[in-house]
Length: 325
Image (cartoon, rainbow, N blue to C red; front, side, top):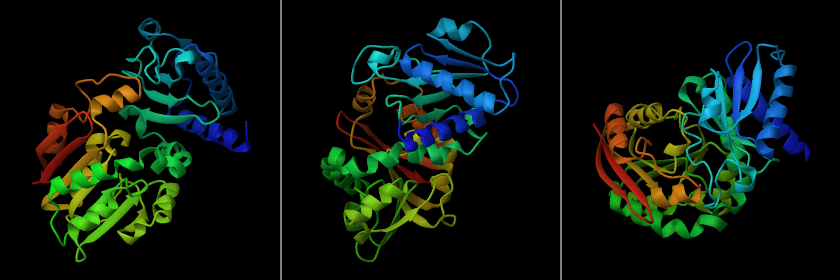
């Protein structure tokens, strides 16, 4: 592996150690393939280096619900792996698609040279500052080819923005803007008197947006969606494409979006794929308790101060619109 790969492993392991409870920890890595074995071996070494490897500490490999029930585990780690590295699913291959349910930490191990934490359960999520490093580790290497893979989605972005009826002359913020595919449409919506601001957590994504000339449509800033750099009730609309699934605390995230939006302002949640198609792409099926399912989304937005007024989960796009109370 390259020095960058070694650094990525060191950063990931440090974040996992920081997420574990203090003292000796009993950890189940729910998988027995090559990737899971590599994670178990490296995590054991990291805990030893941290002085937390004792007879009371355990890292074991398991495979399924029986392994999870075998004893009380402080933390269950689910490795997302390729079909050949059982137990995950990728590109439609069969496997245990329910494995992430109930896991405390989900680690993407599709590429053993570049592992990334993809999800942390709420009780653990606040224990260490893992979120920024792991989000950037996921998006940074993808930034240069993002538009090559998804650039033909821009008409879908334009259609979603048009349906939202953002007020001309208003202030709109694209939170998690990526390479800025929505920015031309947002600029057209608010017109020359309006203001478009685009935020992303990953410098490489913003760099790619500038390289593609999208800074002509918006002011681009490096910022965290969990701590938006705006005064209360200061914007007319928030556009968020694919953001919700990356937030570690969905309810807090919606609250932050509500905080910056004026009464009567808009929240536009969008993805250029329907939820079922996106889930299938990632080798899983939809669950009724997911935040973007209609009933949970209506409840979460309401609790945060929004009223959901439109919900369209079509085969080729997802669009939900809410109005600030």
